[in-house]
Amino acid sequence: MKKIFESDNLVYWAIPVLIVILTIVYVSKSNTNKPNIIQVVSSPFDGTYNVTCFSQGVSMAVADITVNQSQFEGKIVNTKFQSFNVQGNVLKDGTIQLSNIKASVSSHVKINGKFNQDGTVEGDYAVGPRNGNFFGFRYSDKDIVSSNYDGKYQIEFNREKMKMASGEFDVKNGTFISQVRSITDEVFKVQGNIINDGRLLLTTAIGNKTTGIAASGKVTKDGIVSGIYYIQTGQKGTFKGKRIQ
Image (tube, rainbow, N blue to C red; front, side):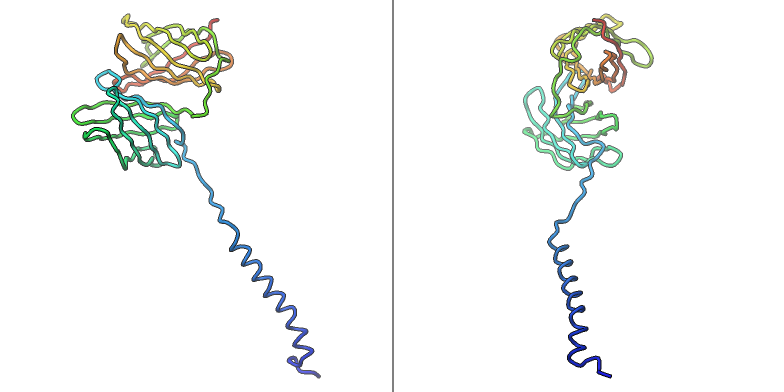
C-alpha cells in the first residue's frame, strides 16, 4: 500500500485543496472591493419649512428652514433685512437643538421649539431684550402652484369650537388675495397659494401690520377645504370650507 505522501497521492490531494484556497481568496477579494451599502434613514420631520416670527402681534422675520436626516439649517431675515444663519439637530421627539447661529448683528439669540408630525413647527425665541413666537409649515422646493383648484371658496375660521372669522377666496392660477372679516369686524388681508397636490398655504395682515396668522391646509379635488392656523399669541385654530363656484 502506497503512503499518502507519495508523489502521486500528493498531487491527488493538493489540487482540490489549492482550488478551495483560491476560491476563498477570490471571494474575500470580491467582498473587499464591493462598496459598503449605507442605508440612509430619513427623519419624519425632513423637508423645507416656511417659518414666520412674531413679536407683539407683528411679523418680525421670515425664514426657510430645511431638515435633512434630523439636522436642520436655514436663514432668518427680519424686517430690517438683518440675517441669522441657524444650524442644529432635531431630536426624536421633534425638539429643536440649536448648535450654531451666525448673525449680522451682535445680539444674543435664543430659540426653543419643536417640529411636529403633522408638518408644522412652533416655538418661541428671544433676540436681545425682545421675545416672540414662531410658527411654520412644511413644503417642498419642488412644489408647483397649480390652477387645478381654481374657483371661489367660502372659508370659515374657528378656535375653541367658536367661529372667529369668515371670507371668500377667489383662486386664480393657484394664487389668491382676499379679505376675511372677524366676528369683531376686523378685516384681515389674506394671501396665499395652492400647490399641485392640493396643499394650501396662506398668511394674513391687519391694517398696515402683518400679524400673527399663518395657516396651512388641504383642498380636495371635490373642493373641500380644511386646515389649521396659528395666531400671534400661539393659539391654534382650524379652518374649513368648500368651493362655491
